[in-house]
Length: 493
Ligand code: ADP
Ligand code: MG
Image (tube, rainbow, N blue to C red; front, side, top):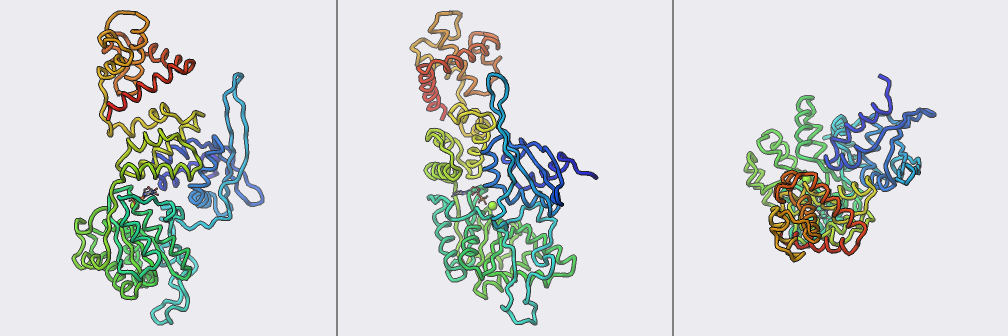
C-alpha cells in the first residue's frame, strides 16, 4: 500500500508508543502533525510539524535514537525525518507564524540503545545478522582471540553523573561506583539492587555498564532484561540453538540483568541462567542484577540461585527524601536548561513523593503545557497541570474550610459568604472563596454554588472570572490571592 504522510507517521507512532511512557508520548509525540512525505535522490523524507524550538531540542536531546530507529524501520534505510518548527503566536490580527525546517537526529552521535518494539523484530543477541556474535568463540576455537561485537543495549543517558545521591540510595550508588571502577574485582559479585518501581535501579545498573564501556573498551558489556533473556532462551530451544545462546552469554565481561523477579517460576530459564552465572563468576566476570523486591521474597526462585546471590552484595533503594527530591528536580531542570522558580520545584517535591519517574513526569508535563499554550510556568499553571498527579497525596480541603480561611483573611464572619448580603467586601471574599473552591476541591460548580447559600453555577462562574480579571490588572490583589493560597496550602497538608 502506498504510504501517505499520515500513514507513515501513524506507523512511527505505533512503535514510539511502545517505547516511551504514556505521559511522555502524549506530551511529546501526539501534538506533532505529519506534513509531507517526499522522495528525493532515493531518500525518503517525512516531515512533521513541531510547535516550538523547545520541542525540537527536547526531542533531539531525549528521543533522537528512538526516532531515528523508528523512521528507518518504517521508511527503510533511506528514510529521514524532518521537522518543521512552526511557532504560532497569537497577535491582535490573527496568527503570526515563524517557521523553520530542520532534519531530525544528530548524525554524529553513536546510537546503541534499542527501542523495544524495534528490537523485538530483530535477531536475537546470540545470532545477529551477518554472522555469529560469538566470533571466534566456538568451543574448539582458541578463546579470546576475537572479541564478540555486542550491542550492549545501554541507554547512554543513564550515567553516574546524572544520578543524584541521597540517603535513599547511598549504599547502592557507592557500591555501583566501586564496581564500575573494578568490575569483577571487588567482593560485590554478584551485585543486586532491589526496590520499588521508579527508584533508579535501571539507571544505576546501566550507569555501571556505561562507565565500564567507556573506560574499558576491550570489555564486553551487556544489559538485558530478564524477560528478554527468557524469550531468547525459549526461542533458542525452539530453534535448536541453545549452545549458541549459552556460548554468547559466557563471552560477556559485565552482564547486567534487570528485573530478575520475572525469572520466578521459570525453571528452565533459571537453570540456564544458573550455568551462565557460574561460568561468569568463576571466570571473574562481573554480574549485576536488579529486582523489585528482596530476592528471598520472589516466588519461585530456586534455592541454589538464591544462595549464589548471597555471595556478593545486596543493596536496596528507598523512596527519596524531600531534599533528594528537590535536588533531582533542580538537576533535571538544569539539564534541560530551564529555570524554574524555586517555589515550583518545592511544590512538586512536596506533593509527589513515591517515585522518581513520577517526579520527572511532572516536570515534563509542566514544561510541555507551558510551551504548548505559550504560558509562563507559574504556580497556577503548576497546580492546574499537576492536579490529578497530586490529588491522592493531599488532604482535600472542604468548601467550609476554604470559606473559613478566606473570611478570616478578609476579617469578616464566614456565615456572610453564604448570606444574601451584597456588601462590597463580602462579595469580594465570597468570590475569592469560590475561586479557591474550584482550585482546591473536586466539586462541581453547581455543588460549590449550593454551599454558598444556594447560588447557582453561573454565579460561581461569574465570581471566578471576576477574581481572575482583577488578579490580572491589580498586582496588589494578585499578591493577596497568593497569600491566601499559601494559607490554604498549609491547611491542605
Ligand atoms: P526503576 O528501574 O527502579 O524502576 P529507573 O531507573 O527506571 O527506576 O528510574 C526512573 C527514572 O527516574 C529514570 O528516568 C531515572 O533516570 C530517574 N532517576 C531515578 N533515580 C534517580 C536519581 N537518584 N537521580 C536522578 N534521576 C533518577
Ligand atoms: Mg527498572
